[in-house]
Length: 306
Image 1 (cartoon, rainbow, N blue to C red):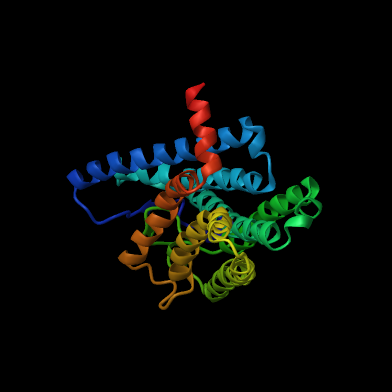
Image 2: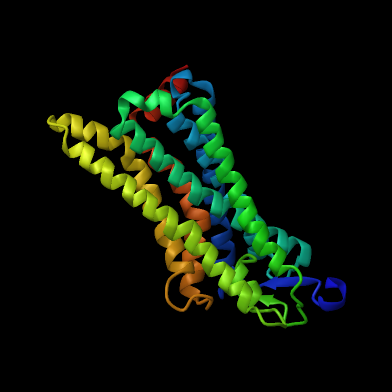
């Protein structure tokens, strides 16, 4: 049925409305940021893998987050770099659908992993004596696998609703990658159900998880305030401050893009916000965790000295 309905076999990504010189300059900057993203998250993965003292639930989840960030950037940045070099180079229909699916999968998975990491911090600070009994290896694996599975499943729902839509022209996507809202605007059919599912999915993976994180940190802050020693309070809070920074960056930009006012209108400001979300967030995450975490910095220092 899709063969009778789909007349567009490829899409053209409009990217950013800039001149050729600016495109080359951005290509250089974005290439460096992309390399830093891969190196930074790769270092986190290597440190967690090689250092036995980092074989704990918190760093296990951090390694999953690093994998997601690498995959997250890889799903959009290479195509954006190609588009900067050759704006007239189109992306195939299959490639566009695949990019949409991968981007949503990794975005959903990161949302859920951040919730799991907040639960880990809640148990570690609010129930320290039961931490080992609650956060067993089996529980950690189950939580991580569930995050990946649910993230892929939610994205598969969007893909199943997106593929049957007829695309008969125009074929220009007003974005630097095949973002689902921008692609839906090109469909030659009613996309009301798709847009409702996008909003419902955003609420499910953003509002719900963020509420859980806020509740977890309310309990964490209450537990920290009960600590009489000032140094003890600072030391305890430092174990979750990095996670709070990552949560603020990730959820803040995502909520503005998909739940904020005028949802579905790909304005230039939201396009640049999504650029920050898909390129700079994955690059900043390893920096935040390495600069604000004494164990990671200590492990990195020992590895460099060796």
